[in-house]
Image (cartoon, rainbow, N blue to C red; front, side):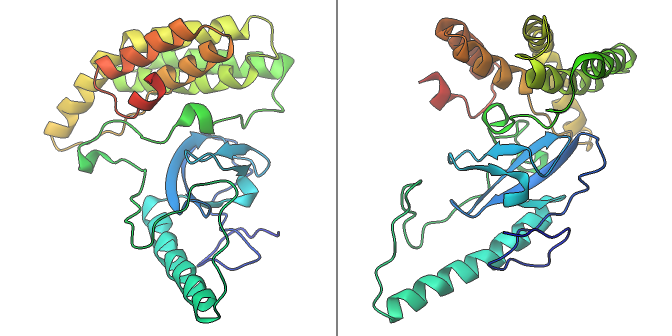
Length: 264
């Protein structure tokens, strides 16, 4: 299937691609999954070949997903696609053709309300509900050796320059994502990744307190803890289930949503 750089609506041969693949900077993108008809958000340096996994389990490259810079654009697209989806179902029914079952996902009941999985500070939620740990599989596959070390130094310098707790947390989040990508390819990266996660987890309560303070002052701040998510995934893949559970319970303990299922 071909892709296009910008899209005003879906068609059968293209995906909306509203981002700059050459920017090289970490950005927040809003993804619409046609398999489950939900949205989820991710933050990373996007490339068309980067593979993402929707919380529903569907996995594809960024080029094979509908990608938007804003939640509003993603919601507009979702509304239009839902109309096309329902029109297609009605056409099949009118022709007495049985609706084909999904081979990947459980059927979505007709009439069911499918909510967005994107959280916003205005909705009173500090945490991004999309499972970034599962969805983020690396936009830095070409960063190795000296390049990886230089990027790590730059990100660590940003932590040292951070002027406040939220800025420090954001800098840690970017370092964690970088180290998560190279954890199996660069010597010592896995250990440094885990250390960075735990350093960010230590300041989590202060981060939440500051985010709440800013919200009360009318300056809402969006906060997503990639540290808990990435670390739990990494520990689980190493076979340290008890350690992963401890991290997940820690996230639940400070009030982060979306971890009950992983804990179970």
